[in-house]
Image (cartoon, rainbow, N blue to C red; front, side, top):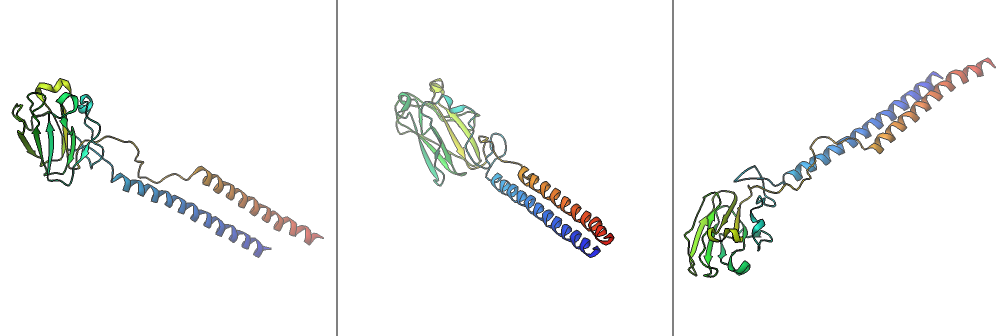
Length: 226
């Protein structure tokens, strides 16, 4: 009977050990998932030149282009050493930059070319980084090479109130829209279903061991008395 009791206790310990190992694997699995979130975090976007840190993504213009009637999306022109923007484009009665927003590589040159339509225009960067002369001459050009990442918002001074606005996004380090998401990198909690199963298994094992103990102790004694 002592041997049987020892065997039952050993079996319980082995089973409990297996359950603990399984629970540990589940927790480890949670850590692997969290690690995956950290990798995804590497793709997160953020600010750069002009405010904040970053790594690419949807540019945050801070509402600058909200009043530009022809703005729909940023034109991705990365991979080109030189990009042309029309001054006095067809949209908004020739009071527009087309395209109004471009994304270029660091080191690229943007060339603004006047169409001769819509009167006299100029190109002035919001913070004074660059400024062209005011002219209505068709074919006139003004260029700027961008050597620092960031977002450069600009406007036509005579037609700013009419929505003649533009923007140049440079490189990967610039203010970007926070899209949310991105969970924490710490270990995830054990799912409630798994926790419930683990508790139930422990209770069943405890009850089984208790019955075995009672049977071995009192059942055996009753048999010896008879």
